[in-house]
Image (cartoon, rainbow over all chains, first blue to last red; front, side, top):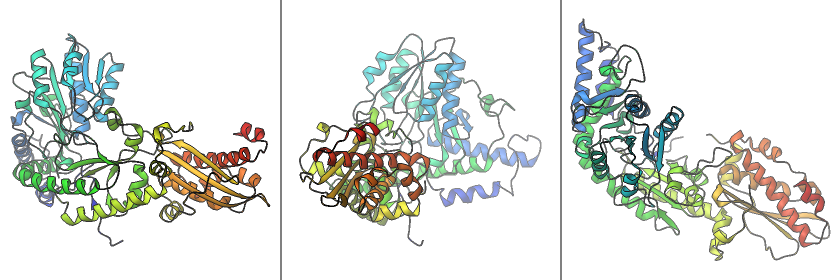
Length: 405
Length: 137
């Protein structure tokens, strides 16, 4: 197959920037040391490389390098933050507040803690995907020890008002954790300025390698501690044991530096491309954008094409374009995206959605081709759709008696 | 998940897409599934009243590739069959023919339901005793 593939699934993972790969290469063979080997040059070189990467990453999010704990990725960071805080502070209280649109790594961790005695409130979001701050404040109890709100949503790109949420946490003396996996490296993220005390993020969503992530843990005002979830040699200030992934960390550092230097130009170019893509797709009948468009990541759009099923639609062009669908037609239950459903989008519209996420390597030509192919696919699927035919005949779809299945 | 060659073929060039005139007495329509579930199939049969044989079948489906392929295949199989023969089409025949993975078996179940539902509709319209069939369904 010689056809050029178009990658519009950058929220799933980003390609590794070649400059990142280049920075990593010496640390596989030439500099093979263990960063924890304190008594020979191999170890010193590795440690120096890790320290440098830690600074590059700290600079991107405007924190002290000592506040960056390396992990294997955002899922581990989410687990470490939430379980670690719960275990460390459970004598103070057992209540955690989070949001229904969080990533599974947060929701399933909270679910796990409920079995260990935690009480968890799962807040719904408004129709535009943004948390209602009054509802958040009303959910706070004397026993609340942690609030967990993601910075930007992976499916819709909707950005939460972190500063306002941070102010509420400060007022009530509650720790604030944010899964910022989709935000760090793409938009300015400053946890200290927003009152965020712990923050998870990962390398492979910002053009770095997979298998390496970080957790920011505030050291001052307040000094936050988390219980280690991995016992061993006491690496990372005792919060995360395990030999550091030196090449991965070097790549993560380089990716962070590139993100910091190129963020403004990437954002401008990608938001223009995204807006063009969205505008053109919205010219198709009965097409809507999901999520708040003003508070949204610059490279993401989530669109529902009414009366077309997302997975079937993807199949019309997935030999050429990679996107992701809100319809997971892979189980007997046919669950549509819980994120979109939490926003009050009906199940039908959630099944009809696709997420398009652009990245540093997306070209103008990619977008022009995507507009053509997706448009053709939507029209093809609508010709096949009995619901589209009913809609065209003026039948109210919601009044139809559907058979139970 | 990779689709089988047969699913891809039916998906790319689905057979018998369209709509029959449901007001005609010799047309039976089955509409199964629900938009909230991500699958809706409409399958129609036209019966030659002289011979009792299905002379035409059409479908439209809202769903994934396997659902579209299952209904396309069903229409192919239906044409030329008597109603009794059509009623014996089993979802596992579809699974086998299209090499559907376990997570897509529900698509074949929906296609079988659509066939049975279209036959039932035809029989009801034509005053044929449907008790036995309803019980089986």
